[in-house]
Amino acid sequence: MPTVLLLDVSLSMCRPVLQPDIAEPYQLRNLAVHGLNSLLDFINQHCKLEFCSLIIFSSSCEILSPFTRDLEVIKKALLNIDFYDKTCIETALASTKTSVLEEWGGSVPCQIILVADGSTGIGPNSLKQRLQDIGTKTKETEQRFPLPFPFPSKLHVVCLSNPKDSNLQASIPLYQKLIDINGGNGQVFIPEGNLNLKTVQQMFLKLAETYYRPFHGTLHCGNLNCNISLSPPPEACEKINDFDSRKVEMSTDILICGFLDINQASNPPALSRHLVLPIPPQSSKEDGKAVMMKQDIDASDDDTVVGNDEGKQPSFCVLLHGSLKVEGMVALCHLGGDWYGMLYSWADSKKKSNLMLSTFEPGLEVVPWLGKFTQIGPASLLTELSKSTTENSFPIKLAEKRSYAQNCVVWIRQMALQADIQKILRHARKLPDKTQNFYKELNKLRRGALAFGFYELLDGMAIILERECTLLPGSAHPDAALQLTHAASALRSQVYRDYNSSIMPLCTKFSSGD
Image (cartoon, rainbow, N blue to C red):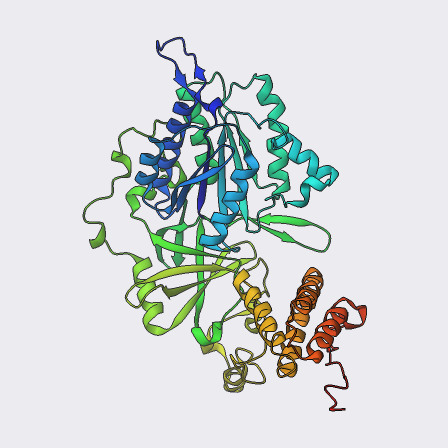
């Protein structure tokens, strides 16, 4: 789960923090750097696969470090920070949105940690004013507020201010409203006691303990077992029933129920994917307690050092990975309660492969062609008749062979939608020679918009076609303007909001040859 660190570099972060036992006072920026270093040390020690990015903001934003696993780069960047004018949190959130979408797309969960001094800005761009504009829906909100983020995310706000400060007390509800707008996932952190190096470090470590705790568990297969860690750590899944909902948590004991051929498993829908890593017994005895939660992160690392002969120790996890890869099989495993998943070998390159865990939706019949998980048994118990029937119909196969040449609409990325619109415009500029191609692509776009409920696209496409009509050169064929006007009005018509209907070319005296 990538992490974005948002650091306020407005002038208010240069305010001194008086401490009775230190002659020269610290500034808020010094406390921020100290706290972020503590967090980065925790992540580097316990979440080595975590990607982090550093963005500083005032009235504008700057990406000091793009996403990287080398956290030392971010630490060095923290030592060379310039400070600017006033705070504008909306700018920081907008920059975060753009950065995450460009790097990870809209499906990867992300954590955003906003570090500020409790100030929410002043003037029309202050957080208070912007939230009021959103509530009243005035003209000032025409520029879309960056929240909620278009990707799964958790938003945390870390406040470098004394808990009794009146400005902080006024800002906390605004910070909480930001988190609520983004879906409610996240938390506001404030120091426990007077603001100093110790309380700031404890505050950042509390965040790390809550949201970056590594998952340590045990993988069981008969009388064989292995201590493992999952990256990213699995989160509790909310199972919604007809009349209630409940959270299902992954057990620390993952039980392998049996093995299936890859063809039988096919490609089941997955809730999340995790990298499975074996850990030696020395570092897993305390499970989650082995992390140094309440201690200084700069203390001795003796408790977490793994022996040099780690690679020589036998590991069931390594044996399982090699067997699944060679045999072309997957392992069905029980994650706790009525939650199941699948272990398999996945290769991210030609030379390197990893053992992965995909979790299904909670339930016993979430993979239709496998049936009820509790009723799956060994193949040796099947009768001859059952074996022949199973071999022919397991898993369920499609009636016809699918082709990549099918006329389907995929708008996962913005560029795909732009490409479809540009294709329509290319045909529009060659009317009437490309009339059939023009209406074919236009109907394809229209059906895609109707399927996704993207009705604004139809109105926008109508405006684009009307504009193209006004830009036609004097030498253009008269039928071009008529077809564009007809297509624009049809896109706005309720008649063509039916998915099964099609916009047909307009019959004119030019097209009929009269």
